[in-house]
Length: 307
Image (tube, rainbow, N blue to C red; front, side, top):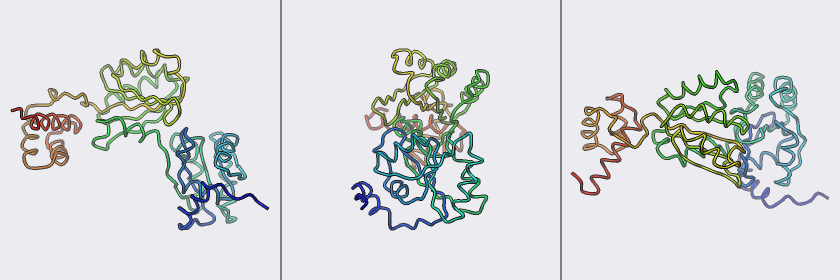
């Protein structure tokens, strides 16, 4: 007689079982980036439903599933065997199995193995079903303020481990007007920090160990990042996500041409702030974030009754 499923799995089934989960499909399941409590109910239901869980690391995934009261056959599919293991997954799908794929943390295929597997399944005419979940990228952007105002950013992921290539990458990001998101491992973070410091006063928001017990989020000029790391021995540990703020996101409007500010004032007199800023950026060619800063400064002065 089998044991009753944990209450969490019952809740997941009740919340998600109304949706159809076809056989012969690969389910790309996003898992927590550090905090087990961040799992989605639909992800739990699918993990309980599938015949096999393909994964980046079988030991890590066995522990993850055990934390939710689940036990499933595991199949290793990682960066070193992804092309070959994809053939096994495709064969199982053709037999009518449901297969889930999980990476060690977060969304498969985004700076993690899984992309080749999804490509092989699609090429075989089979279905891939995405199940979204926790993301260090959007988690950091949600607390970074001005960096996310216009919704535009560049996801750069991991830069090259080679010093020369990494330095060229950093300089290219320094010339990028939009916000940029970088990921980095603890053993390379100090080298990256030295390269980012060359960007001077460019604003940087650092997320370390997001969602975990010792999570840290800090904002600073890029030039101060190496000193911030060295201020505590613990700060070079854990996974990092870095947000390089947009050019012009300094909180100052003096860098905008007078004509651009005049256009902004005319538009603000007739339109709400967001469409006024958008149109001004299109007309003037100036960065939308800097214009938004200027618009906020004008609104504050108006609210305080300043001329």
